[in-house]
Image (cartoon, rainbow, N blue to C red; front, side):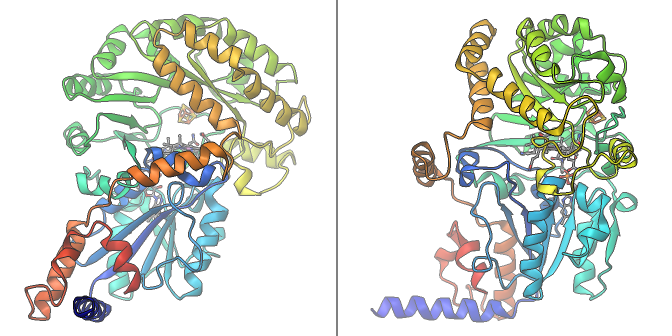
Length: 516
Ligand code: B12
Ligand code: SF4
């Protein structure tokens, strides 16, 4: 009884003293999308974390800012009851399919009078729309803008729109701790790394050039330092085109030899033409590439501005890449103007004759401000602006040679056909690396099967496993620093009534931060 009282008094002291903090409390959020099912538990099991969060964390000043990050895809969804009412400023990231949820979250915080910042590709291209749900919008790369916003907040000089394009300086290699902010939320985390921004190509449906008008490569020293901050052995390069500058890519792969990392990335099919490049990639740990082949119909590729690809050579190119022990997943887009309803069957027939390890299907989607969107708008072919359906899984425009319903049905048929047990078995058996293949096939199947519906049998089992094995989020050096600074100010260097255990508390954030 007595010890309980002491602890309560201590806790009261902490809450009391920290309530008058002179440091900022900031929260960064990635919203959940319709595409993320199963209450995020499956993603919590194996999560390739969103690089956005540690990147912005690395641009958050160490002194005087307490930071919390939330990825709704792997955590419980935020509600008015669970949001941090004591936060000072919230930053939310949004791709187009995440925009509506981002707006909901923004509205929730703004109701409490908390400042909301929106960034990412969607607010970049539609800042006026975003400003209806936020106080501040960041356009373009956001690291330096985020640092500036925190500073302006302190000085009471916030602006409505920050132009990230003109402010970005250079990449900041991440620290292990910044990565832990997100990786500790999964059982098995896969790190994400970026070596460049943008893409030298100009496909007409792509949003990348809107966010990154120029193709910028990071300093290789910084990239290697960044990779050094990764604790585990697996990583994904999130670059749009890691391989675009061959001398740079080759040097990167040379330097990665011996680091003991296994990695995958997106890649253009043309990597098959450079033996040295492939060989160095394999030696550096490359085990898989996702190739946006997009279509096996030359005319479709031309209409999308994808030039220089001889579709008849695709099977041979796939084989060459696989010969290096690199797994190939092909990305297919349906809905180009010249395609009629026979495209689905024809596509599967062609891929059935290749040795491709896995397939991934998308519906052509006219994202805001892209060239494709401008054409379709002019022709009156956009069906609606329900952004959560702009996820490449829904037909949101009228194709030329089929109806939107035919496009939707054909797309779903292709998934079902391609991920039937027979097709999966065939691909796994002929794959040079059946274990990787089986994992990818399973991922593809889960992506489109509903066997793990929320509260289903498998979902519950995954939840139990995750809850048991989830790593503990470390108390960050930043928070330790803030508490110590405060205690010094209070002339109580021993901890101003804060029990030592709080410094070690893994869930300091949720136990103390939320209640301030
Ligand atoms: C990696 C990636 C993914 C991963 C993401 C998961 C993961 N664990 O990493 C996966 C494969 C799952 C994925 C899925 C999808 N993706 Co994606 N993806 C990317 C990619 C290649 C890189 C994103 C990234 O990590 N960048 C690195 C980080 C550091 O940059 P960032 O997030 O852009 O953040 C910077 C700025 O935007 C800004 N910023 C962002 N948020 C905020 C917030 C605040 C507060 C501030 C201040 C600043 C700020 O500051 C950051 C630092 O500069 C981009 C292409 C690109 N270059 O953007 C496409 C991209 C974002 N994806 C796209 C699409 C279409 C999708 C899908 C719909 C379909 C698909 N391709 O599979 C799904 C939808 C997923 C969903 N949530 O619903 C489109 C989005 C178009 C649009 N208008 O929304 C892009 C642009 C690709 C393209 N070719 O057009 N994607
Ligand atoms: S190759 Fe990929 S990232 Fe580059 S423009 Fe085309 S779709 Fe965009």
